[in-house]
Image 1 (tube, rainbow, N blue to C red):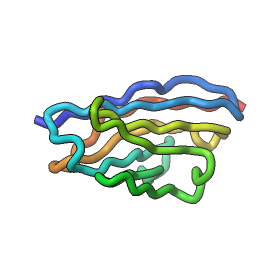
Image 2: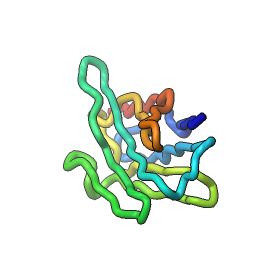
Image 3: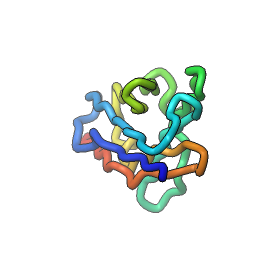
Image 4: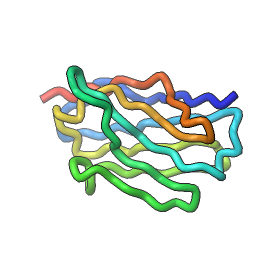
Length: 113
């Protein structure tokens, strides 16, 4: 059974940095791509960034140049480095991926102005 578990969320001041982690289990991790999504109150869930099995990356325009997605296949972990955060980055961040399109439970990120 594939499981994804996010960590690293919290409260950060505008302009600060935060690193999210997504640990995977029950999966041949290196075979699959993964994505970070976020959902703010009253808004639809949106793609933030994704990384495929060979390391290719894509970013939403709103975070391009500020966020970096990466992966460590040995640790079965996907990261999202968030720099120069803004209040509009406040949301629950979810990890997604694997053969069954699994979602993690999410981690809250709150950016204070």
